[in-house]
Image (cartoon, rainbow, N blue to C red):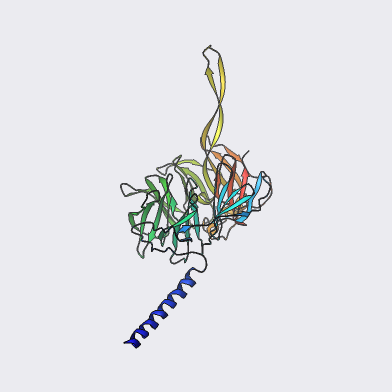
Amino acid sequence: MLKRLSFLSSIIGIILLVLAIGWFIRYRNGATPPVTPIDTNSGVTTNPGSQGAGSGSASTSTVKVTVPPKKAFGPVADQEVAAYYPYADGSLIIVQPSGQVMRISGTEGTLLSTLSISNLSYASFSRDGKKIVAVFGNPLNQEVSVFDTDQKSWSPVFIRPGSKPAWSPSGHRLAFLTEDQLNTTISTIDLNLSLPKIQDILTLQGHDLTLQWKSDSELFLSEKPSAYAASQLLAIDLKKKTVRPILRDRFGLDFLWDTNVQQGVVFEAVKNGPGGTMQLVGPDGLVTRKFSFTTLAEQKCLFDQTRVASATAQLSASGTVSSQTVRDLTPILICAVPKNTTRFLGATLPDDYLEKDLMTEDGVLEIDLSNGKVADRSPSVQEGVDAISIKATEEAIYFINRYNNKLYRLLRS
């Protein structure tokens, strides 16, 4: 009997050793697993006691940041950037390719999360800049976690995403896709709830799909763009769980929508050929304006608002008339536009650009959507920039330069 127990103990010891070695190999590059397994049917699993990209709090520390002198145009800091958020007070939070999260204010940098994340493939900020969604890990079995910039903690959300998770226009809802061999399921999860749960909306046939929010109650669903394949743009009603077509059979369909102005900018390729065109569309997909320039919508454009001064007459109690200057918000479109149009329009788009067979040198255009006027905001400095991930504050326009993956700032004054 003792021999049998000894034999069983040896077997158990060997199994535990193998599991320990496997755990070490799986997580030695940075991502700490959640202590409790993630249940994709019940929602978020958290464990405040552990640390890592999977769950828990992240330690903070102040570091020295190399910040170039503030000027009309140039890099913000010396770090490479995977995602970022500019705040109205001039500070920024950046996510580095290593997964570390840093707040930059002036010349001081504070690491909000010192933990590294293995194989970070995507990161994105919520509309208010308070949360960051990150996709990371084994490409065949990726994980999704959310970082809270106030609490400085990571929480796991779900696993095996079939698309880049998309933040809602308000609040902290995520829309995402999961795939099996035949179908794709559209789901949402509201992280503002005390017990967030995944809500499955619809299951459709198809793969390589992407999501954008049309409004708080609707999503846009489209296919990965290619000049060699026709794409559709569908609107998904989250309450009614219905689907309706917006755009049909568009080659190279690259699409960016703005939930505030309820308009979208569309790049459409030439079927099986080089070049393409840019248009502005309304909620029904009808063209409202054609642009004289061409660039890629989702990668190189941003809908924004600017204050435009206008004079109004005001009658006083004494009967005298005085003028008053009022600054009204007007919608604008900011786009990074390749300067070498011959080379850009001679490429197969958007394929060559997305596959990095094509790099561009861009200028910056600002289009007033109320009257169609185009203003050239290109920096006077002759530095090659291939601008993506454009964001803006009242003070500046920001973007990531694909040549060095660093964050640049262009002052608007």
